[in-house]
Image 1: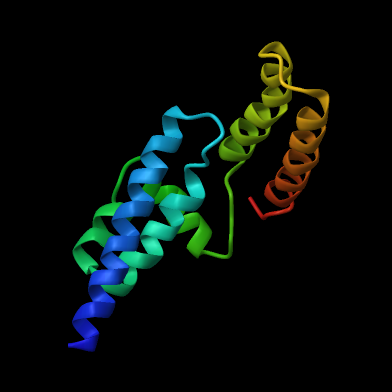
Image 2: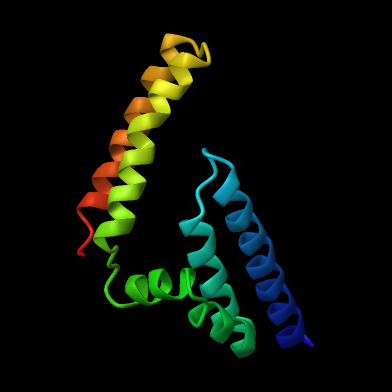
Length: 121
């Protein structure tokens, strides 16, 4: 009984994080990759079929395999991520965000970009 509940919780976490990751493709401030990686972890714990589906996915499979293989992020993903992060403060400024919010955004984005750029390729 407990094993079934744990499996259900892992599958639910995997599905919710997968949906959030898909939404993140279209929403600039919602990250996609961390949610997809969380889905892979949750499915690995609960559903070999769903885990294999993610691993064989043409877009996300490579990202998951790279991360599982020593926390690697490929150069193309790094370039896209850092480029989008660099554009976000400009977009915020153009949309009229207050300077304190843009400053906070820049600090967070610098921290995230540092993390991304220090991962092996």
